[in-house]
Length: 413
Image (cartoon, rainbow, N blue to C red; front, side, top):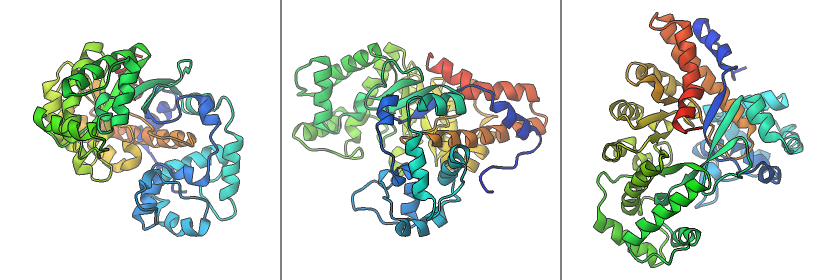
C-alpha cells in the first residue's frame, strides 16, 4: 500500500495505454557500458544515492563534513539508518525506490531482517544483459540519453551520449588541460585560446557520437569578458573554484558553447533548480541566454523546479526552448501535475519531453520513476479529457509524443 496512485476514468485508461508506448529516456547517469555496471558491487547505501540520501540528511541523518549528501553512501548500519528512513520512506524519492523493490524483488520496504538479503539479491542479478532486461524489456525504453563527462561505449545499443560541455570544465585547470590533450592543442593561456580549444573539442566529441552537450543556469544575465578573464586567471594560477565562484567564466564560455552547438546541429541541455542553493540555478537566469542564441536548441531540464511557472514561460516565449520533465516526477509529483495542467494551455505540445530517470546505480529505480511519470502524465491528460477539452484519442497521441516522438525528433535519434 502507498506506492501506486488510484487513478480513475480517463486517467486510468491513459495509464494502461502508456505501458505500451515506447520511451526515450532523456536523462540518466548510469555507467557508460553494461560491463562497467556489472563490475560494480552495489552496497546498501548505493540504493539511496541519489536522491533519498538527500532526504535522509534533511531529516537529520549526519554525513561526513564536506560530503555531498545526495551522493554519500550511508553504509550498512541499520540502527543509524532506520529512524531517518521512517520519516523519509513515504516521500517521492523513496517511492520510486520502493516501486522498484516491489517489481523486481517482491518487497516494498526494508527491515532489519531483509535489508542485507535484498542487497545480496541485487548483486546476484547484476549480470550481463541487465541493461536490456531492465531498461528495454521492463521499462520499454528504446534509447536512454546518458549525461556524463565521457561518452558511452560505442557498441551500446541503448545509451546515447550527452557530454558535459566546455563551460562545465573551466573551473579546474586539470579539466582544461584534458580538453587540450584531446584535441592535441598547446596549453591555454588566455580566453580566446580557451574558446578556440572548446570549439575544436566539441567538434571532436560530435564526431565520436555526442548528440548533446550539458551546461547549466548561472546567475549571470549578461556575460562580461573582463570578469571572465579574471576568473580564468585564478584557474590558470592553480585555483579550483566552485561553480558559483566560476560563474562569470562559465557564462562567457557557455555563449561560445551555444554558437558551436548550433553550428553542429546538436542541442544544449541546461540544468535548472533543485540542488542546494537553487537560487544559483534559477531558470530565470536563462532568459537572456536563450534569447541571444535563437539558433541553438535548448533542452531546459527539471521543469525549473521550484520556478516552474518561469520555466513554462521560457519555453512558451522562445521557439528554441523545450521543456524536459527529467527528474521532476520524483522531486515533486504534484507540482509536475499542477504545472503541466497549466502548461497545456501555454506550451505547444511538441515542446515537452515526459521522462528522464536521472539515476546512477541500482538501475531498477528507473522502472519506479517511470511508473510515477506515467501516472503523472495520465493525470494531466486525463483531466483534459474529463473536462471535454480533448478526446481520448488526442490524449493518447499527446502521451506518445511526450514520451517518445518529441524527444526522438529533438535528439535526431
